[in-house]
Image (tube, rainbow over all chains, first blue to last red; front, side):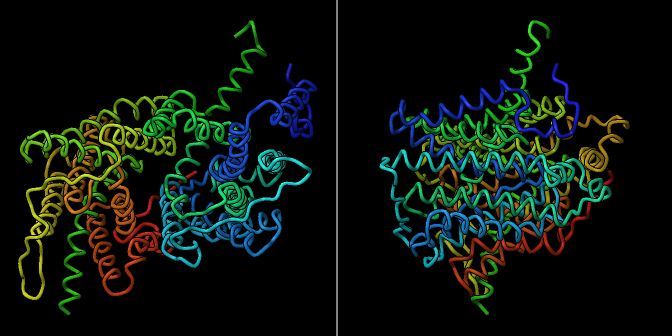
Length: 326
Length: 293
């Protein structure tokens, strides 16, 4: 029986030895990926890793704190361009990545201020406006965006005798693992519980002693930090930045990933990233089908499976745990 | 001064279309608290239906009528086919908003599939180049028609909402759903009518916009976002607010483009949204919803 006896036990990362074993096996399979996958799959896996980081960040905001943001592409652009400019100046990779995260996080705090007064649909519109405004500023301000020819990003120099693709994959995978562990710890800490309390009812949370100003701003800051890091990694991956990349469709893609993966679920964020990367890959021959599939998946998920792919996974697991009973 | 008037007039004409889009958004928002993200795409689809019929040789008025009906039918089908089942499953407001987003994505893909992504030109009975001189300013036939469409649409909506039994039922439903149901108002029918009317307004705006711009699958995105901005500016739950917001936004945008900078003309709407939401979240004419735990 799955019995939790103490709070400490509830917070544990993986409760059973079997879970640790499966996690280890998954990690080993991912580490060995360059051994059995060809380079196109390796590139796809790298993109999934970097998207998963940003989607995790957005899930902290939407899924855990309940603040809708349709302006994620704005934070993405801020992160990507900060990273690209710093990298061009010769700042090392990780430092530039951190700075990109911080820049986006700062923007997140600024956008977070309206969230103190706005709720639900109003916040959605404000963030939508922010996203479009950032996009248009980058599109019209040539000094920032490198003008018509775009902004080149210096390539990552591979080390340890690995090929560039393998090296990039390992770095991105490593960052994904780090952010997964950090996110898990964050959401089971006091901060994470405060986020959930705000989501469920902000007035009630305030009465319980949660400082709304601090935690809403914190949620925005953390989530945009993730998105900024996502932007930096994306810039590094693309090697060439154009403002067109960060239009409203990108915000929607990230949003779809959160919904499809599952609101308020860390592993759901990763599944969502897999979904939004693999669907366009499989249907690259008929691109019109991609938004249709996104849309239909959203419709089906919200009507039949509100917890998304993560919910599906939980249900499957429960089915086998309880088998043969239902 | 003449330049100022000219820009203001151009802005009014654009603003009346923003007002039509905003009216559709507000109509749905105030009766169901759902932000309809599919509004722009339903309008695009309707406009493309008109385009397809006109290219097949039907007269413009027939095509226009069919387009409007298709838009309305799609919205009603979405309301009964998706939104109500979702509500039965206990979908919250956020969920319903996301559903409209899903619908928008589906429409986007289908439009690209059916009509391709290349821009087309919608044959339109009013011409863009024929102009009249009104005192110091010029107005084209198309801008005049656009203004008239905005005005007629707004007045008809006003008459419907304020002077008919159906309008009374619509107001009652948006004021208090449970009370309206208790009083025997068929709220689902009333709400589906709201969705239909909103789409009709959207498609009308879409057809007029397509006459002024090129027709491509994403041509409604910008006007839709600006309709949103106009709705926020006027107050998301106020129908007169949507009209006022649309006109202010259109004029402000046109003046910014004419006198300040053309580059950031389109950014203005979003700056307005953010400022309005910070200073007066309920908008110029809207009123706040109070919340209880």
